[in-house]
Length: 147
Image (cartoon, rainbow, N blue to C red; front, side):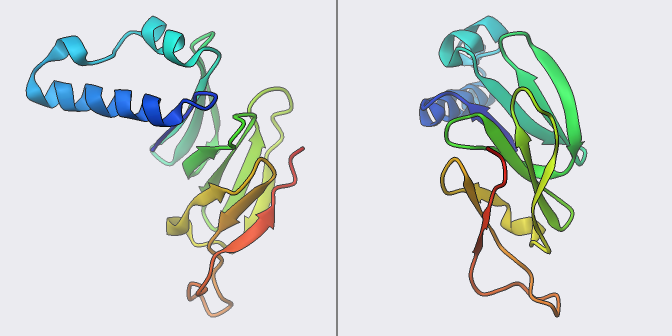
């Protein structure tokens, strides 16, 4: 999974990345965006948050610096791009994109496959597991705790 903070241009950026993938499949390498400078021009001071091999990585496009955030999967940026959240085992976790890198536990006993979804810049939705290990019938909101 790849989340892109594009400051409101997320759908266009996702379409560009998807188009590049399809162009590669069609053999038309000219349309496939591979240049970091091109990506910076599209998203400005954006960032990429992605997971690989059970770990979360944050890449700031302005510097091309990538840092290991921690274990987990399914990362997602807040709507304003200042925070991100992800699933780590049965916990939803989050932290600020810049500055304080403290990792906060947003919710525990969550269903990993349900992911974490931002409702606003301060609230996320997760699927909680019932005490018997079954998945609850409805998603639950958890106050994020990051300001």
